[in-house]
Every structure is written in C-alpha cells, then in structure tokens.
Length: 131
Image (cartoon, rainbow, N blue to C red; front, side, top):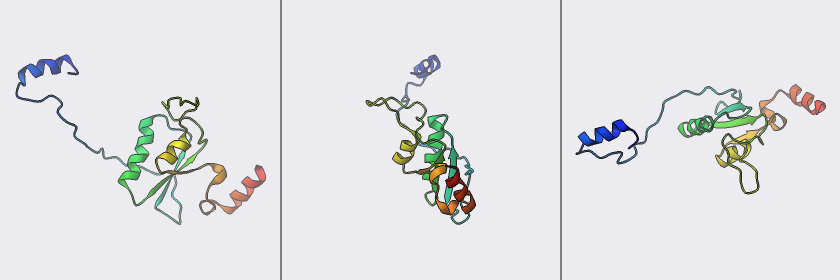
C-alpha cells in the first residue's frame, strides 16, 4: 500500500484486489516542429541545445510513434553533451544526445553537416569560408 488512506480503504474493500494489473493509456498533446523543409513536409526538424529532462526526450519518441508518416530529425548544438540523468558507463562516459538519437532511430545533424537541400546556398558558402 502506498498511503495510510489506501491501507484504511483496503480494510473496507475486502472483495477488491489492490493494484492487480497495469492499464495502458495515451496522453493527447500537440507538437509544433521548429522547422519543416519546403520540399518535404514529412520531415520535422527539431533544433536542440540539450534536453532538460528525460521526459522531454520521451516526447519526441511519442511524436514519432504517433506519426509514422513523418520523420523527426534533430539538429543538435552539440551532440556530445550527456543526456540528463545519464549514468556513467564503465569507460566513464555518459550517453550523449547523439547516441540517444541514434539508438532511438532518429537522424541528427549539427550546423556543420546539414543536408544541402535544407539550406540557402549562400549560407553554405559563407559558412565554409568562415570555418
């Protein structure tokens, strides 16, 4: 029993089972992608500095699962940043944002390796000169 109230109630509900099974449910919500390529409206681009919580990361898994006709793609500011709450592995590293994306079937990019078809050609040339 999780609370004193539940203990007290269980004394009255003798013909009832306590937490006998799990019931799955879905939570309805809406997602607004940060960017969508003009040429392919089935790609949803999410710009991410970092995930603040694991729950935030799970949101994108739910968006992808609920909308199999689209692809959520991340553009990380730094894909090597550790995920929130990531435990240290034996090699002392932590699961990074990029590793999380790959292990969950998401493509990901940074500003330096964006697909050309998403970008203004002048911007790509300028970035190459600035590097």
